[in-house]
Length: 285
Image (tube, rainbow, N blue to C red; front, side, top):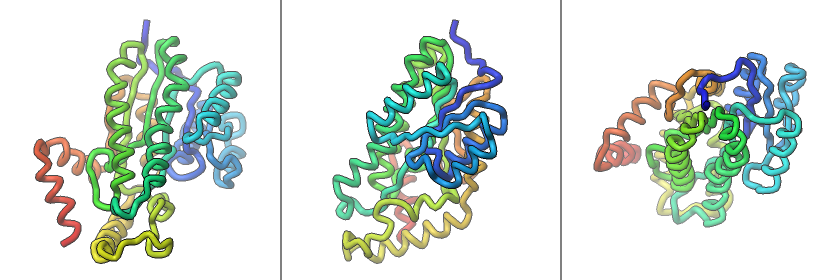
């Protein structure tokens, strides 16, 4: 009989654990005594190594590139051998991509989809059969306000996050028939350096900037800088993830701040798109 009740001690896999939200989530799950598998693109990342050393026996690092089929298969084969199964999968791996459509290459678009969308597909497919057979499990993916509300200069990123939202929303009712709960966590700005590490962050330097967008980009950059000044700490988003993993009846969507909830409500009530269009067009005034 499927059950929604999480075990007291869980095996938690966090994909995208090198830094930011993923690293913060690993630390918080480990502090609660769970067995945490940190899937890391760079398993030698110093901050992650230090976290594992401070939680001996609870935090285990495995190499994991969510954009690579073989890497995902090898990582999950290893952890299944070590732990037998997975109670909670948390998808934190993600990448940004900044640029107008004309400035964004198809390679950049595809890479954004490979990491932000297909990366979640790969890891979810890896654990879902065992969760279904066990009659329980939690699938949690870090989405974004960019998965609900399309934003200028974020075409590739928003497309990948919109796809993620549709994927998990579609999966949720069927998975629930087998006791597997599916949830999305939707933060707004987070203090992780995510934007500055995004593809296309400095297109003027790499030669892909188009002059026609220069003034609009300047206004956009100023607005984003303002948003970063009031960004959440990664630890706050991680705390939301931990709460979702342990809650008795997790919902589909969780916004992690009042700001995020306000914008999500704007989108959800905007049947014809006029309110969102007015909101984002105002960024350039």
